Length: 468
Ligand code: ADP
Image (cartoon, rainbow, N blue to C red; front, top):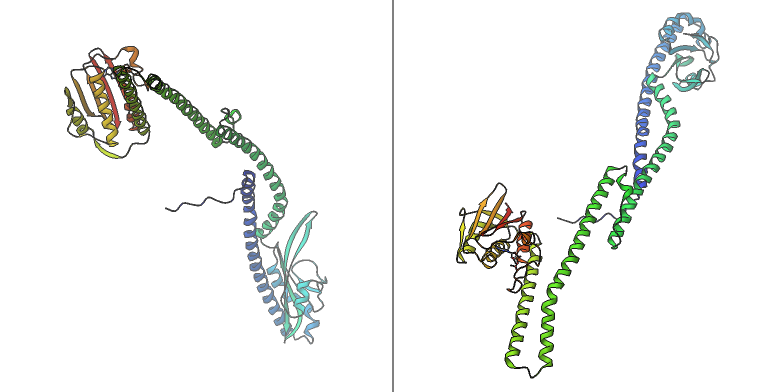
């Protein structure tokens, strides 16, 4: 798997918010562009239909002129105007109209008003009078403050190749087009309001978010610098749920860290205390031996034997601490047959028996599970002075249980709650380090279980669970 390289750039929160909001704002504008395309399409369709109508009327007009045998068709369109009226009326609707103009651009026939009006100045009319199809869109006032766009299409009327007038068809663009035009105008005005509102909202959101995140950053920095645990009062009421959750997670982490630091401090104090006694005994022995060169041989031998005992103790302490440190790492993922392992340990000690099924598997570290059984059996024999020790292995739904029971002296109620404490031992003179049961509990916990004890004179039972 290739590691993904970290992103090189980053933006402040406000920039992200502004960018996202403006993107959302831009969507209606995109939609409007789409509407514009539809609008143009509709306009094109309408114009084509109008052109078609105008061409029909133009042809009819030309035919009428020919039929009327007028001498100069270019002067005489009004002669046939009456005959053309039904065709013009056909076009006339509330939103459409048709007119015929002569070569000067004067209206000679119309489906509505403006008879005789001069349309020669209109773009489409002058185009048509020059023999081309003309078209235009003009915005006209229909009432005070209300305008409407109107389409004009003009087609020349030709007789024998000469332009004798023009047919002008006019129509309001379809409602959709009008609507799009209106919406467009209103939206353009509204866009400004929307942008200002958006920026205000972003400013509020950024302030709320940035303030809480900044105090989280400050608290984290203070923790990293080893400063006092910063409280995050303003984050309990942070308006963003994730920020609250982050603040909660931060509190939990810093609490955990404080506990861990306290644990390390306490642990270091315990360790130094345990090491201090043997070390000062050794220092005293060395000083005595070097100061008194004439010390009798038997006394010297006694001092040396004592020193050796202290060195052994230091050695056991170091081994015990190392085992504890190793146990605190995640156990390996071996298949361990606990039944077989317990039977093997039991067989190695006289008076110790194993009970339980022939096979019981868990996933974990075989050497560490072996250390559990060995420690418990040795404690029963050594501290309990037991005659009978039984190692019972069994299975529960989700765990394997190792129970080590003995018929020894038992543990006093006062000591029962302390036996799992590191360095707690009632057998310091006999070489006890007080690390055995701490190790047993740590290993079982690292294997997803725990260790419990019950004791009364004549019966002590240690129960270890290991998750399957
Ligand atoms: P250590 O064996 O070095 O003393 P442990 O942590 O193994 O350290 O045991 C702590 C103490 O618990 C022992 O010193 C002893 O007092 C008590 N203890 C443990 N197991 C038994 C037992 N089976 N019977 C009686 N006392 C026990």
